[in-house]
Image 1: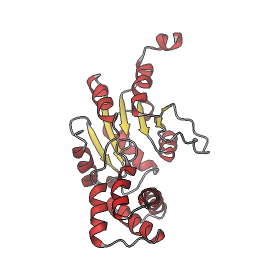
Image 2: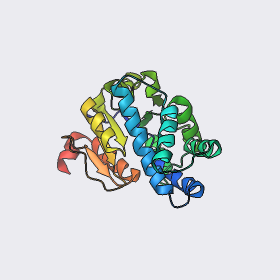
Image 3: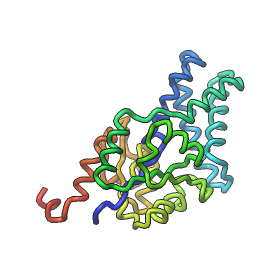
Image 4: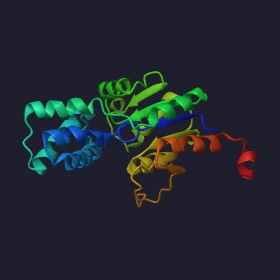
Length: 234
């Protein structure tokens, strides 16, 4: 089964959600890393809780709610100006340094690339544009279409529906272990960009491939694109 397309998660995979810590540290000296980490954890938790309880809100609003809570939890005074600065920075998160070259190489090799993200369309358009990735993806898919966040099956279904391929013929790439689990359960072949060297979640899932950087993905794709006889000989 050859790979027909690659779907990328956005936040944490293509865009560095912890790059926000530099601004956070300027606004709240000595607290930037703690704020960035808690903010991300609450953002994910809120998205999952809202999906479980069918109380969808756009990801931008979820992200803002998570920021307000995190500052309160850490005892930080979040004024309107600081809140706007933090949210504005989130709209233009930095891509990881190797990503652009990797994506361009995959596209030049004829691979169809797409994004499937919890982010709402405006957020994704801003992030993709800021990273100069506009011409790389055939689809930038937002779960806002189905009003359910990952790991809901309806969210992952967007990829197969819009790309017109079976899940087994698509590689889903994420740096988030929980996302790898959800995509694997849905039926995608999965590649985990395990930047932090974290253990896999204890959910009975083993990704089909993994690496520490996105630059570890092309060798995995090449191996899966090789004819079956070639793969058996390797």
